[in-house]
Amino acid sequence: MFFLILYFFFLLIFFFYYFIYFFDNINNYIFFFIIIILFLFFIFNKNFFFLFFVYEVLIFPLLLWIFFSSLKSNSYNYFLIRSLFILFFFSIIFTFFFFLSFLVFYIFNSFFFLFFVFFFFFLTFIFKTPLFPFFNWLIFAHVYASTYCSIILASFYLKLGAFLLVFFFFFIYNNLFFFFSVLTIIVVFFYILFESNCKRSIALASVVHMGFSSIIIFLYFKYCSFFFFLKIFFFIQFVHAFCSGFLFFYFGYFLDYFHLKSYFVIFFFYISSFFTVNFFFVFLMYYSFPIFFSFFIEIFFLKMFSFLVFFFFFLILILINFFIFIYFLKILFFYFNIFSLKNFKFNHFNFLIFFFNGFLFFYFFIFI
Image (cartoon, rainbow, N blue to C red; front, side):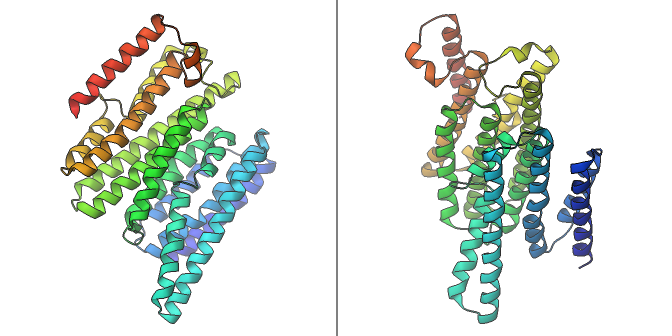
């Protein structure tokens, strides 16, 4: 109860700060300090109900921050307002019906209402994770929100949902979760092939990563039980939070300079060599290039499944991630996208593309 009162106290400070911030520009360090305090309350509490309650309530300051930041930067539009409304509306609906069905189940002690408890709890998590078909709000929120909002949304809120999956997956353990995770990865793969917006592509890659994380947790609860897996899972979440936050920061920097969100203007690599090298290494780490530890983690999970069905299935998922990585490198460094296939001509750039693909495929299958 003491932690709950403290949490609401800091939440009120948060709301008060942002109402002042809307009219007067105050240093943003106050906001990050409040976020850190709320996160510490979240970590050092073992009450599952309190964890779920904090995770659901935390969406309201996040919505206020995105909305007020877009008002101050004059970047608000129909798509941002629509995504925020969808996030707010479905969060209220799913959470309300979950608590209502849980209360009815507790009063009447009927297994008929237990199905509704599971159903709304399941919908709450696939909406916030997010998985198919509820990931559109995340894409538009990332594209039209400010740079700092995108960083917090990708590096903090989505990782919070991933950590909650570890705590609550026992209650939502079902083959449906596995099905929605696989469907999310396949659908987002086709989305990315026709995408040229930088921030939207990073957001879609975050959705793919959350789908991978959900599949790994599902397979862990189904077939494995060693604690070393959880350490690897937390390390993956940390690496992805670091890389996605840095990529949103880089493209926000690029957007502030050139006011463009397209891949097809590549001259921002000539701003500084330090900027280029940092961007390149973070990009390779984000998409699990073979020299980085995230790639060996994927291969470790691939080797862990000796039975053929999940071995080939996980191999297909890693190959999808690999194709996305190659496609991003093509459009970033060789001006090559899927729409230019009809005008394809063999020149030195295309030769570099084929050579690079062959080298990566050879390097990839050595480890498999």
